[in-house]
Image 1 (cartoon, helix red, strand yellow):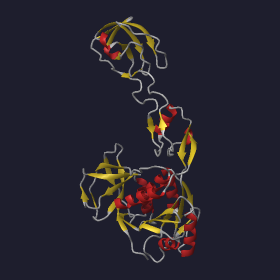
Image 2 (image 1 turned 120 degrees about the vertical axis):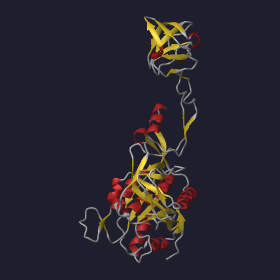
Image 3 (image 1 turned 135 degrees about the horizontal axis):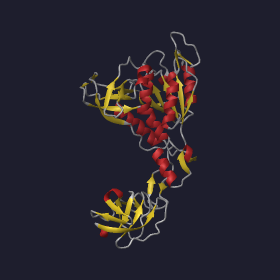
Image 4 (image 1 turned 180 degrees about the vertical axis):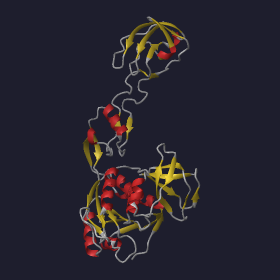
Amino acid sequence: MASVTSLSFWDARRSVIENVLAARGTPAVEEAGLECAEGRVLAEEISADRDYPPCDRSMRDGFAVRASDTPGTLRVIGEIRAGGDATFRVGPGEAVEIMTGAPLPEGADAVVMYEHVQRDGCLITVAEASPPGRWVMARGAEARCGQRLLEAGHRIGFAEIALLAALGRRRVRVYRRPHIAILATGDEIVELDCDPMEHQVRNSNAWSLAAQVRRAGGIPEILPIAPDRLEPTRELMARGLEADLLLISGGVSTGKYDLVEPAARSLGAEFFFTGVQMQPGYPLVFGRARGTFFFGLPGNPICTMVAFEVFARAALQLLAGEDEPVLPLLQARLAAPFRHAPGLTRLAPARLSADGSTVTPLAWRGSADIFALARSNCFLVAEAERESWAPGDLIRVLLR
C-alpha cells in the first residue's frame, strides 16, 4: 500500500480545483430551450439587445411633472398607463397622471407620488420641490444596448431565466452536462429491492450520490456493486473511467479488503491525495486514470455525502463549464455549545433557523447515521485550530 498523502481541508479543495482546471479543456457545447436551461452552464456571452429600460420610465404611481414647476399648482392634461404610449408633452404648469412602469412623457423630468399631492378636479397641488430624476428610471439605467450581461461559464438560475426571457432568447448555447459514473463497493452492499440480511445494507450511497450529481448539473450512471475482490473492482473502475468523472463509494481505507487504491494503481492512476484532515471523510482519494478524474469516497453515508459536497461537486461543476465553483458557506450564531478535538476540520449535522441567524447542532451517532442527517438542513464546519464554541458564538455553516 502506498503511503498516504494527507492534505488539509482547504488544501485538498484547492488541489481538486487546480488539477481539474488545468486538465479539463473546453467542454462540448449544445443548445437548450429556455424551458430546460435552468441549472445548465452558459457557453456563450449574453448581451443586451437594446437599452433597458428602452425609455425613461416612472418608478411610482403619481404624476409626471417638470421639476422646475414644483412646488406649485399644476393642471393634469392626461394619463399614461404601463404599456401605453407617451403621446403627451408636458409644458409649463402641466402634469400627466402616470402609472408605475409607464414611459415618461416629453418635457417631464420627475414623478410626484399620489401621496404627496392634493387633487381638485384637473388641478393638483404639489407642496414640496421635486428634484429632476425623482422616481424616474432613466433609459439604459439597467443595461445599455450591446452591454455584456452574462459570461460564458455562468450557471443559469431563475434570475438568469428571467433575464434571457426579457432578451427574447428562446434558446441558448450551454455546455454539455458531464456524465458521472457511480460505483459502490463492498460485499455488505445489496441492491434496493433485496431483503437484506443482518450483516448487509442497501445501496443508499449510490442513490444519494446520484441525487447530488443531478443537483450539481451532471448526469449520473449507477454501476453494478463491486464485490471485495480486486479483479471485479478493477473491471468496474475501468468501465467507470469511460465517463467524465468516476465516484467510488467505499474501499478507500487501509483494511485488507479496501481495494480501490490497488485497483486504481493497476489502471495507471496518478494520486493527488489519499487523505484529507477532516471528519467525517478522512480516507478520501482523488486521482486520475486513463485521462479521467476519480474520487474514492469513504463508505459511511455521511462521509460519502460530505466529501461529494466539498470536493467532488467542485470537480463536477468545473467539468460542466463553470470556472469558479463556490462552497456555500455562511456564518450563524450557535444556539447551544459545541466542542471537538482540534486537529481536524469537522462537519456535524445541524439545523439552521428559518431566518438563518442561529444554528443548533444535532445529536447523531456517527457517520452512518443518515436518520440524523435527514433531520438536518446544514453542517457545522468546526475549524481545525479551535476547540470550543459557546452559545452566541459565530460558526461557519455549510448549506446542504
